[in-house]
Image (cartoon, helix red, strand yellow):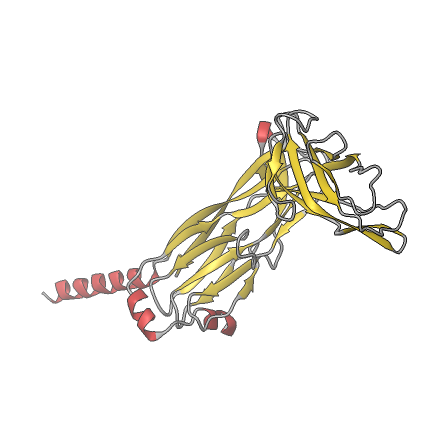
Length: 153
Length: 168
């Protein structure tokens, strides 16, 4: 819990400006595996500055208790109804406050994460994952939807 | 009158509790995307062959010449690739070396031909974007110049040219 609190640390001036805000979530960047080859597993780390998925969320203010949940796909859909497996592991989530003093905290995207915002009110969440194309995976573009829900209570 | 006051107080308390206890939720979404490509295959179609060279006489094989070196590649139809080379600075014959340089190249995605339709590669030392043809083929041709010294040791000289294709 202390680590999560530190991640959300912000300066006092920022806290003032955020204090009256509402709960919000924004999808910033897709989780992009790029080119993958049939039969070759491919992973993206949440620390990847280009390929990792990114969400931004804000809470009403300091003291908010936040619950983070993901709706994760098991498969990506491709051409002609083809599907490709995608997995998320315990360390595929990364939460990072917006303060320069913040440091990253690993979160499990498959589990519900609860934290309390004590000194900050917004953060970015980065997401990695692994796709496992089969040996006979049909060439083409595959996609799936990841949803992140923030509940403040 | 007292009854009304009590009711008002109860309502106010109730509203306050509701406001404190309410949970606010918000959701956002992103996509997970991947692009499946078939593995790239590259074979040595033809060696770059200078034939006989004479001491003190440079010899050039153009990438458009019949003796040019050729790589034959297959991959996903119409997919973009970066073309890169690892080029030797010398050919070797035992301990003797023969300088080679001034590399040239061209690629053709529609036919195994370094004539018309072969797109020049401006700089073989840099990465060049290209694409497989509609049938998933790409032919890449290379040429160069060898510069034997006046006292170049007689012998058979050889070196290795490596081409790497990477999807992008």
